[in-house]
Length: 242
Image 1 (cartoon, one colour):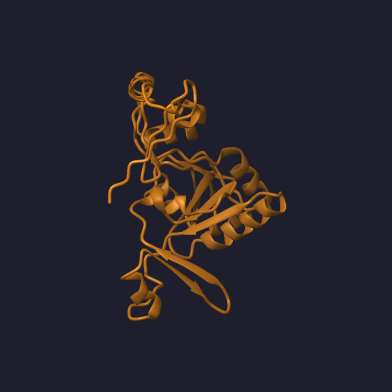
Image 2: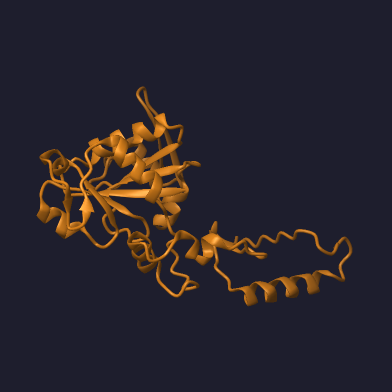
């Protein structure tokens, strides 16, 4: 899944920009997901759904105009993992994210300067209607077709686990990718095809090659004397905490 965060202050054109880009991407045959960061709660305190969410892990709400799925994620990775399989995930807000590129939606040059954390790939929003060509080396794009094309080419999402296998934290690697100093394949977790995969609550635990080899040989050695074991077969082990 590739992602881009559209960041900006209130009334800067984020929603309009995302809507236009999403429409173009859909017309091009892509599956598009949108996630929005809200400062105020929408599940009003005292409502039925609010009461249910206090006692249930997940709440499904069926309404006349739309459906909703309510849950509390452990972290941002778990939150994004609830998104169905999509080609592009467009994020509205999420200024603090450090593992995805960003499009700054701004009303002024000052907004761009404040919001540019080294992850910006373009500027859009209200300021794009003023005929400005570039700000701080970033292209200012109003045309949804051109902005969608940029998203196609430059969207990405790093694992956001700071495993250190590449020698950098995910935020550092993301900035280098945006600057063109690194490529997505330089992320060891995304580019490698591990022989051994360990997941904890659905999240992959990064392991260096020698650790994978140690785990594999230890497990195969323990199971080799057991009836039913066959050399070279795929092994799955699940450990649950009740």
